[in-house]
Amino acid sequence: MMSFLNQQELIELGLASFGENVLISRLASIYNPDRIYIGSNVRIDDFSILSAGDGGIVLGSYIHIACYASLIGQGCITIEDFAGVSSRVAVYSSNDDYSGRALTNPMVPEQYKRVTHGPVTLCRHSLVGSGSVILPNVILGEGCSVGALSLVSRNCEEFSMYLGVPAKRIKSRSRKILEVEKEFLSNG
Image (tube, rainbow, N blue to C red; front, side):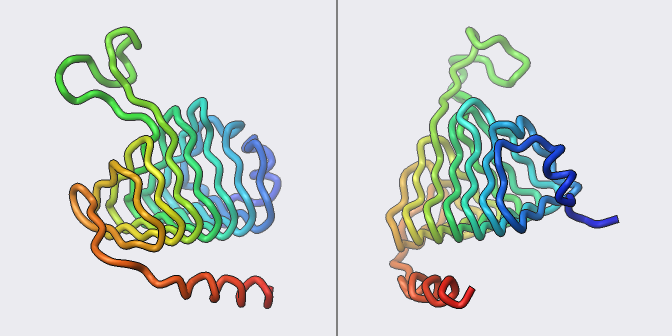
């Protein structure tokens, strides 16, 4: 048995759309596939969870979502071309209120909860290190990288490196990746 879904299984999954060379592990969990759009050259590894809410999930091309990563929430989650999500990363476009002023969890009726929903965008060439958490209403700018075990609750500048809890900018990131992309695409 192949470890990734074959073409017919991808069609039967019921995704909103998908491109060429899409590799989704048989061990990944996909919820509301009709709200998930996938470009070309995308790999989603074992035990990843994609749970699309009303806003959906939009994946560009040349993307890797590593094992145990999760993309969850009501807001739109967008991952642009050449972005990467390392293992055990959690991207949330919804977040419960932890202040004690409201109840939490999906088994409680909405009127007793205070959930924040908002879009999350990982722009081109952004990279999120293992074990990091991205909260709603966050944009990782083009070329931004987030170090392992970081908590991102605010927008991150393009071509910058972030690290920590909460994530803070530590230095600039090289723009050389843009030249490498041009070379790659011209040879492909």
